Image (cartoon, rainbow, N blue to C red; front, side, top):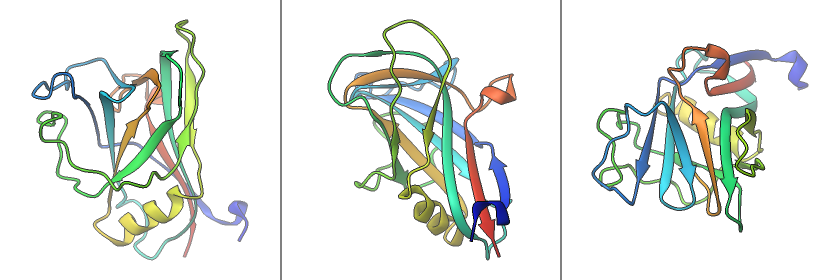
Length: 177
């Protein structure tokens, strides 16, 4: 199946959140942006997959977030996506102390270069590892939660509720039935 032969759908997240291991009981729901910063700031993003037919066979999954700036400290600057199997987290209550665990193996990553100069840049995870994760959540509970982290870089991202919809995170899929 060619991607052009399938149905293309773009999903907006229903929630996002940030946690900090440096402040394990703090909640960051009121922050204007979410961040990934080395091992201590992590971002969570949740998608409702109910707009997709239950019998959809995914051929492509692409997760994108728009960064507004960052800094490269060195080392591994990839931003890794990990599946979160417990989708009950909420932006208003999640903290590092109660954040859900992730599946250890990542399901793709992106890399953005920043030298401290602010500029918008899309982080795109179109890894073949992502598609079966999204397919599994579609046939499972119908909700996809991902956690983002980077061992060596800091990047900040526009949130799910940003006033400009074109800057919000998205999950793009192509499927057939």
